[in-house]
Image 1: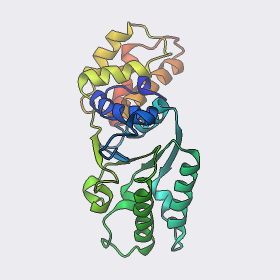
Image 2: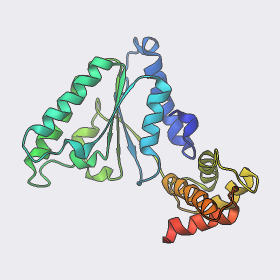
Image 3: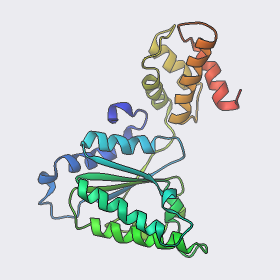
Length: 247
């Protein structure tokens, strides 16, 4: 996955491009006097492409990629979550340059003391320790994603940890057209792809990238079900209705 596979989030891509350059040209940035970013938090509603962006950063950088859902750290037995964090970071150190991506960070990164979950608090403490260790290492970047930034423990966002924050919001009408053009690749359409993208992007205000992908998939299934080789605009509009309101 590269930035060419990610559409409709141009501002977020521009923000992340610098991180790609740092990962690809480590020697160039080695003598920079200021502290280079070691972590970045992707913030936005579900389905807007945060995970895809993280994969694209790794793909563009050409480095090892270690994706994990934060919920995988939370275990029934106290201490096991912290051990999993240590194991993940140890693997990344061996493979560096590398990117660690923690999805749904709020599952383990919520404010400490907010509940009675001792295991989660221990896991978060270990995560903070590991992130501090990476501040002294080169070739390691931590990306994380959440749709609840207000719930995160402030310690995660302090300088040297997840210093940068990039908002990934629902796409504009132009962005939706760009996303549709990606998901319509490989589909045989009755009409010109630009016409289809324009019509459907105007009919889908507020749709996320994930929802637009589902629109294209539903349209393709409808054409096959009806025994047609070409996908029509009507199929696409039916896909919009199915995605929005259900079958």
